[in-house]
Image (cartoon, rainbow, N blue to C red):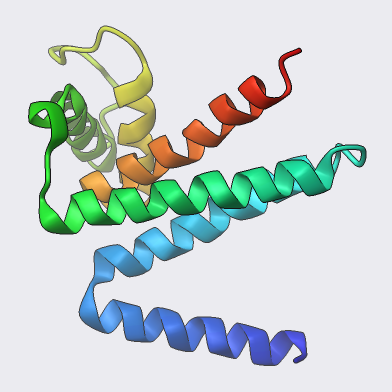
Length: 150
């Protein structure tokens, strides 16, 4: 399969996904982007590239499945945790960014995680799925750090 055929298949798959859910199509593009960034960094470490790549695929795939399950079943373990508040603040930040307002005045922000999620919402779509996928991606870095801490 050459590159052009691969791109056609990807675009076709995204079109089919977008027919059912635009948010899921944007999420698929976001996942591909995060994976591409991760594999660029993993390939720089030639010594452990295979192990890190396999660890990434396993951890990220498990967390993506969990994220999609939680998102589509609306299952909220532990009463939703603090993620509802993060989502609300991130949506406010995204809305402000689209209006050209870069200020955080009047927002309840105790740290910058909701701000980062807000910027991702502004770049993609203001939906909780994007923030949860970012969280799944960040989980890999925790596991890789744990895996390589001696």
